[in-house]
Image (cartoon, rainbow, N blue to C red; front, top):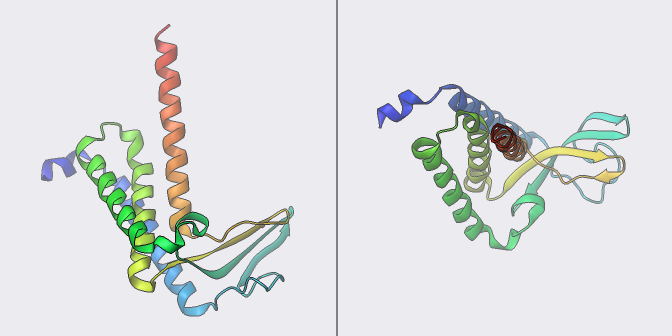
Length: 176
């Protein structure tokens, strides 16, 4: 088992830990110091802390919102099955990273996904829900409030898609 860790770079582990800690600290501070965002409060900063308003038509505030489901609150009525699914996916990704991943280009994005998913699972045990705080209004569209973990998951998936598409294009050009 130790040989598995010797072969792997420490950088993905550090990236994952930094994301996880930043997510946990930001959620704790939000939970502790900000009141819940009132949906009927239509005025910026929506009961939170205003960061910027009307920067090229974009507003950004830190506002306390809770989420009982997955992205955009879907499956909120199925919290326990969703928790089990999240844990199974995390364990599957960790097993893949440790035992099967041969592509070093996948290590950091997979660490980002694992860290983000783990942060949202820990929220369930600490608060009974996921704490969200990053609130953007993009040219009048009130984007759903999210957190650092959600951002890490999204960016990790996007990174994996880019890397895998680049690999496919390089192998297809080598075939000619």
